[in-house]
Amino acid sequence: MKELIDMKNIKLAERNGNGRSVVRVGNLSVGKDFVLIAGPCGVESEEQTIETAVKVKEAGADMLRGGAFKPRTSPYAFQGLGLAGLKILAKARDITGLPVVTEVLDTRDVSWVSEYADVLQVGARNMQNFSLLKEVGKTQKPVLLKRGMHATLEEFLNCAEYILSEGNPNVMLCERGIRTFETFTRNTLDLSAVPALRMLSHLPVIVDPSHGTGKVELIEPMSLAAVTAGADGLIIEVHRNPKEALSDKEQALVPGQFAVLAKRARKVREFMGCLE
Image (tube, rainbow, N blue to C red; front, side, top):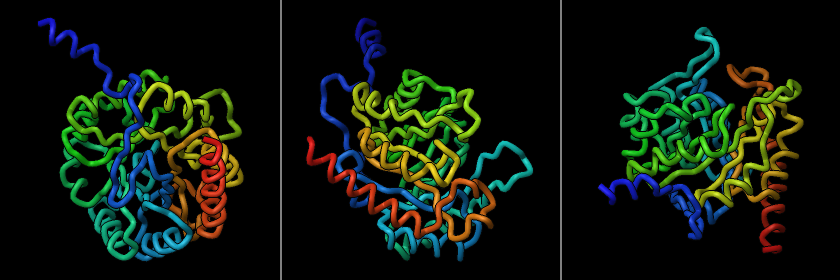
């Protein structure tokens, strides 16, 4: 009984004086390598997704993001293409070589989404979906866990604990903004969370300035600030024609804007590395 009680007090996500974890995604070592994840909010068509994938690869992206399933505020909004979307993402991976990051919404979908995805994303709305956390924890797939919009850092790390406690060590934390009284931005991007999480946990920290701000004009400056704060990577929404996007058109960069951001972010990362 004492042994069981002691195990309950172990926090697998805590730093505990250990070094930082590295999560392997294909040939990437997230936590060691600085990574750029880019792509459309939603997979809308094969042509749109593959064109965007090719362009973000040329611009310096390391992974492709894209939603085959879209949790939307309204049930009448675009919900994603489902299985067809996953197949499109897999084809984009075959063409570009970019590992695929896509969201899984339901415990029933984890096993077959894992067949197509390289990284399983658990979105902000599902951060405390404990059944889903346990299910992705039973896989060995890398998991990108997004912070809930009302979650404290303690609550965020406890959700990571659910995944880790099921035997999956491949967890990446994602700060994507929290809900405050501010209405100018979509969310308030809490960049203080980056050094705080690095102090509290050994897990890699990714920042999402697209959802964190909701405004194209703010994405680059907040991306560079995130790199300066110590982020291990960025996840950016990119669309070939944001005006035609079926979701999040206000926060999608065009490929040319992403190319400039990627170049500048890597320069900042290189500079910060020289200071270590």
